[in-house]
Length: 272
Image 1 (spheres, helix red, strand yellow):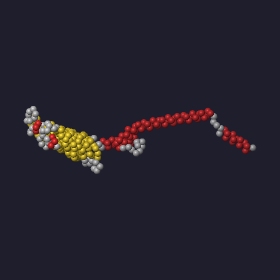
Image 2: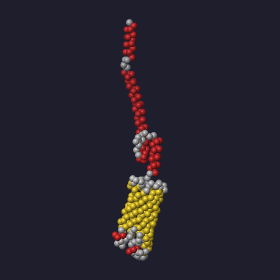
Image 3: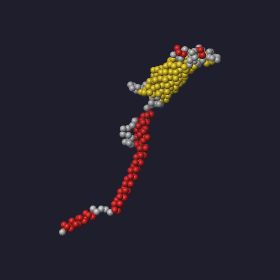
Image 4: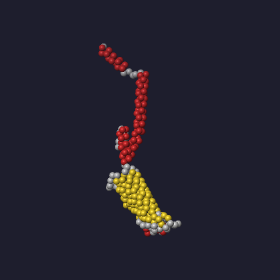
């Protein structure tokens, strides 16, 4: 009898404990779960917005860093903002020190003709010495694979005025100056491994010369060659001071005029 009563009690208790919950209880639990899900979604959206803002701030930093020092294998995500700033600052400083190897230069100096020219027009009293002014553009082409020196292409323009007087100028006695306007295109080899001192040489180049007055054959345009050498000193990374010498030669037989001349003078260069 006692065993039957105990069994009935246990059966009633378990039945009551495992009975399904009411509909109101289930709705309340579902509502609490939905509220919890909404709060979690709101927090996730805030985290996503913070990630977007952080990536927007780091994107220009990463772009500058990759442009200066190359892309990172791990990317910028693994770097803190402070480390990225230090890296970019170092890359910018290195880029300021490392130039492309080109130069724009302005020069002047002395010109000497091998002989007097155009005596038909200027007479025999025209001199052989004069002055020169001009400029040049050095375009970087490559680094030589053996010594890491620079090979550049130079485009130069020079004007030379040869002093003198004559009594044979057309129209009467007056100045007998000879004018030379030269455009040259040349390869230039520059030694960059001696610190701030940079010697250079132009083995051979092509020149176009306009001479006025014209020659006895009434020709005023001559095509010839040029060679030269010089040295410069880099004084402030972006600026150089140098000395250049060039010899320009042309065919005398074609135009019946000797326009070979030597030019030498200092120059100032702007490096890029």
